[in-house]
Length: 189
Image (cartoon, rainbow, N blue to C red; front, side, top):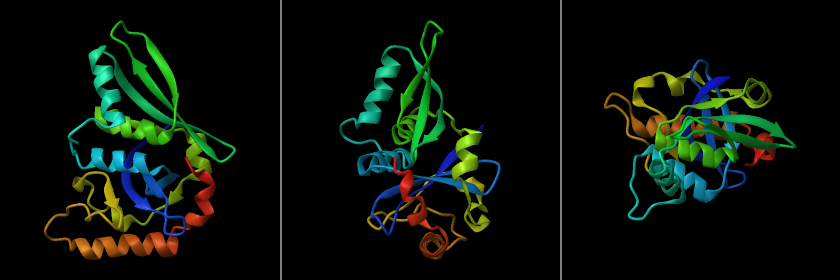
């Protein structure tokens, strides 16, 4: 199993659909997963630690778990069948029982970000779908996870020595020229 972090939420320029990039914490490979618009907004909101005036669905899930004394131990992007990703949420109740809940990867990631649960990718899924991602985007791991790259959003804040616009441009060039998103469109969540 590979521990992963959300490295970016971006828009597929060919489809106009949101994509999350899950980066393996021990390599430069990423797993792109196409997700719905509302899930992308929810994930971006969690990455930025934004608090909406009213709870979004994943905030509600977090509140429900807290109310009954349950916690998410981890989520795993567990399978890829017929070009569809599957995920499992591992939920521990207050009496110690462990439940494995089938879920969409986008919902699993959105919830994991809110409850600070680790995200994993199964070896099988990783071997089938992960791809190399240039190291230039991962040089400064202290910046944290989750760059949100979307035309309506500002780039994630960077340290003063880095030019945010230059970094964003490099990232967008990579997405446009090197990351063949059309090849992965069959993996829509």
